[in-house]
Amino acid sequence: MSRYKEYQYIEDLGKYVGQTVTLNGWVYNTRGKGKLQFVILRDGTGIAQCVVFKDNLSEEGFERAKSLTQESSIKVTGVVVASDKAPGGFEVDVRELEIYQLSMDYPITPKDHGDAFLLENRHLWLRSSRQHAIMRVRAAIVKAVRDFFDGNGFKLMDSPILTPNACEGTSTLFETKYFDLGNAYLSQSGQLYAEASAMALGKVYTFGPVFRAEQSKTRKHLTEFWMVEPEMAFFDLNDDMDLAEDMVEYIVQYTLKTCRKELEVLERDISKLECIKRPFYRMSYTDAVGWLNDNNIPLIKKIDNKDVESPFPWGEDFGSTQEEAIMEQFDKPCIIHRYPAEIKTFYMKRDPENPKVALAMDMLGPEKAGELIGGSQREDNFDWLLERIKHEELPEAEFQWYLDLRKYGSVPHSGFGLGIERMVKWITGAKHIREVIPMPRMITRIVP
Ligand code: 4AD
Ligand code: MG
Image 1: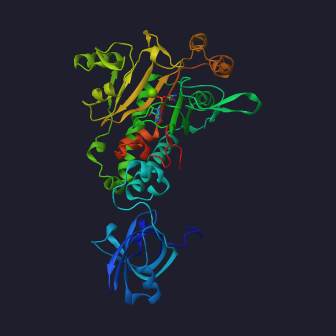
Image 2 (image 1 turned 135 degrees about the horizontal axis):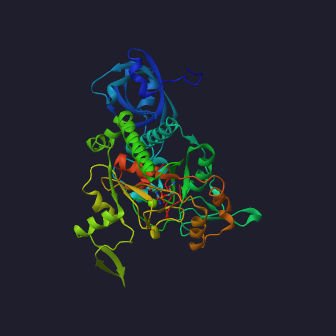
Image 3 (image 1 turned 180 degrees about the vertical axis):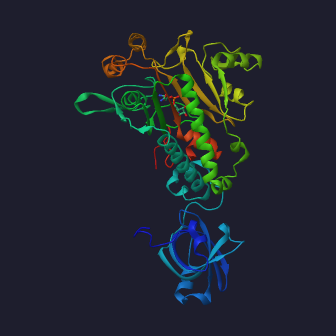
């Protein structure tokens, strides 16, 4: 296909049975004695057993095979043989073996290491089979997202990362100096710019890293994460929820189709994903509060360092306790919609039928996945939006361009944001979000 394809890859071994191939990779493991050595090789695409029989290669070649250590980098030439016993179903009968570099004292061994040690060695930890599988699933999920939007008439319109204003509240902003223009902020969400893009191109999505100086040290929060945010002119909240469900179903089913092997390595219960098909569940915030109180799930607040319980009051935001309790009954995602306007962001449109609630929605995932998606219909009335901006004491001057969108051909429009890592965590069944991004950024970690 291309002039770069000089070598073969482990994932393609099935195509070469009976033929000689050359593989490049790293030594995962070795065993053997006497005239027979087994080298388990990984090349990024998979793992293959290489059988090194003394009589089949040069004397130096066999000595080199015997000297191999974990994570040494090598080049192997041999004949591909079908074998039921070998991982992946094929093995390589080695004829020559060369060493790029012998690796000395590789720090990550098959024994159990603590989390802190693995995180410090994240640059190496990525090579282990579990991390390898998670990263491949992540790549598939990102591809599914792009395919879904590209295939449904959306245009990619990326938003800037350096911005003059806040999108999702001012408490989680990363600030940086910006030449003579004062302070800039790392974007918390590409949404506001996506709205401008949607007024130009109709249906758009922005997909990039976003930043939040989150004080939350949970299994679900990063300070840098990836978000895909579609924004659609003329969509109302209902259209928005329909689209979110279509997208999630597509991503899960695509991953199931393309990542069987990876999900097997991760020992993921596939049946929990196979059932992720529409219709999903939907519930208004008000009904959810009723459900919590019917089921005696209280609000717990810390007062004077003591946990104080009360019935769940309308108007309070859900925490993970409430979200998980609600989701316990569901095998598929559930969208909670029409939250109290006071606990939601300034740009959300009030429900004309009940101005106390915003036309907002959150999609919660099953299996304690938490909030996967947050979205809303946007305020499209100039005066009401200006009032919200003033009420929140946001810098009006920086929002003039955003208000312009309500001045020149304002239309109903909606959108949402999906946190990619939340999705990868749920689909892979990873215990902690730090495992599902190559280099996690958290309050207490920026290295490597
Ligand atoms: O609910 P959020 O804050 O919504 C927005 O940012 C909107 N502007 C999106 C839009 O309407 N275009 O964030 C959206 C999603 C959440 O549902 C969650 O999946 C993820 O982003 N998320 C995080 N993921 C990892 N770490 C964090 N600290 C996250 N905060 C939000
Ligand atoms: Mg949210």
